[in-house]
Image (cartoon, rainbow, N blue to C red; front, side, top):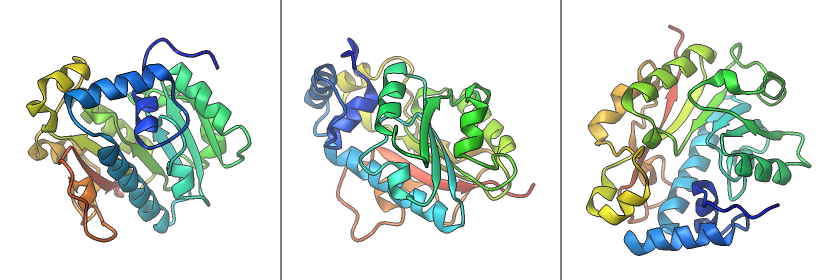
Length: 248
């Protein structure tokens, strides 16, 4: 693969998770961010652990097909590893990440990777959607929406989640995270996130879910969502939830 000229958040996270699918440009960007903020590996490992717990909880409800938006690199405990009996369609908008994901999953018959804009489910290849998320719109599925809310304004996020609610079948589940105001105390790191990055207070999270109903676990710091043992002591950077589509 030709080495990219620009860093990718997905590959930076792979670096922080201890993966092998990143380039020097990503390492340089990750290290620059850490100089402005502090160690990121524990924070993103906690976020990935939340993903695993959330996906397994959804699978325990009988869901066996997952649609993942903003998927990043499909390794290091990503969805198909957390729910190995399920089928998974990973999507992203970054062509380098998509090609990388397709190469990693080339030998899998249970997980695929393709283009998909989270704000428009119609951008997903229908053949891929049918193959890896069979019954989309007719039977419950899992929708994974991590790392995206912070890059959508309130109106776009609320509309997107409502459109996903309308498209998914009753009983479907949404795994989502929200960025808190943690970076407000680190202006240099915040500037690196770009003008589209949006921090939100916890009070703002629930209204954005619209018709999606959080499980009784609520919307809590990701380390406190069904923790397995004492939660690690980490900055409160992300809140997470699993929410369910009702019968209307």
